[in-house]
Image (cartoon, rainbow, N blue to C red; front, side, top):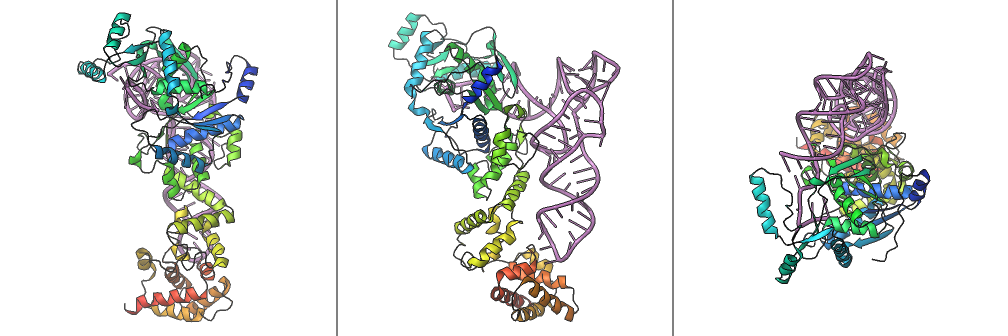
Length: 502
RNA sequence: GGCGCUAUCGUCUAGGGGUUAGGACGUCAGAUUCUCAAUCUGAAAACCCGGGUUCGAUUCCCGGUAGCGCUACCA
């Protein structure tokens, strides 16, 4: 891993030609830490990295940031990989685990120490905590006080000999400022006096994020660091390290954060944040991806529903917004419905089958066993589905004979006691309809309504509840045709019994 | 607290020194109809506040305010 090929990094903006060349060698990475599931914010970061790589014919690398051994979990790595794969964000290299690169981080730490850019700090966590608390009590801003910054070599040797563990800290210049040009936020500058001597290597020898991220981005030849804006304030620390290492800095692009409806950072409190949760709720990967892409990026032309190819074509970091965005579930739902409606029949059939199987409806009467009408039923429902879940939920009566009547639907359309007899009569007449087409069913029902001088709607609505359990469904006669005479007659007869006792 | 970043309809955003401030989701009304979805038509809905610069600021500058982020031997 240490001898991974270095990739020349061009000083991008100095020369127009240089920029072109550089773009041909784009290398980006998505670097989640396995301390949680794949968050939609992380997914968007991954998506932008992926789009950027594809747009410029570059390489998309996956890296697992598991240097926090206490909080990292192996099963979460699997979940993250699955989430990315589901979204179609496949990686060209990796996954690389930071936990396997410890030697390299220590080597870089030693180099920094040798060159005087870092020094050992013998302060214990407890000591630091005390001093921090004291400073806070006096309402003093706390920053590492540099207690070990200028320890004489003899003192360091003595402490080491005494077996005192030491962390390695970066020696931040006391004056001047550190600035960098961000692709999204433009120029960001920070006075060095605001930056503390941060830890590079913990006293147990494990690297912190700052060291491992710089080491890896350097070794992997990353040209563009595209990550969440929560890293914006820490970027100067890393820029300082690149310089201390005598290495060129990559380009940075920080992405605004995704917030919940209350404008707080999106978290479990707001409901589902994991990509997997949306999958389970019946959201299509392309819909979630499209929705996420639009959260902070405006494609040229402003078209909202756009296939992945068009996203790749038009992706531009310069068109990424600087301000945080609220995750709007309503819009996601709309977009999902939009994608569901546009799904080629074959693909939808497969997904519906999968959904029915997941809830144990697959073998039931009305499901795939009646192949000829399965496709017809799904297509009748297609324009009305918001998620895949609808097929096993509100559309259940189309795939199973075991379904409940929605209480509100009954209340609304089964008010008339006389309806019991009418539904039974309708069942009897429908039993003779041949062929059982929507037009013939309609003629039959309307004929009955006319004879009894009733409004057809009364009968239609009552029958809808009887056949589907719902007040809301596709056109009744289409439903009849798709359900078939046997089922229609049986359901109407069954419903009539509800009125008998009333 | 310190530091950084951000600020256009409820939400995602376009725009930009002179515009009827545009689009999308959502909302409301209407058309259609057996309910719904879809579709079509229409409506309500925004430039955070205060100073400057300017003939003219929503746009540029400064300040304020608010929100978010960072401020760990987390990432």
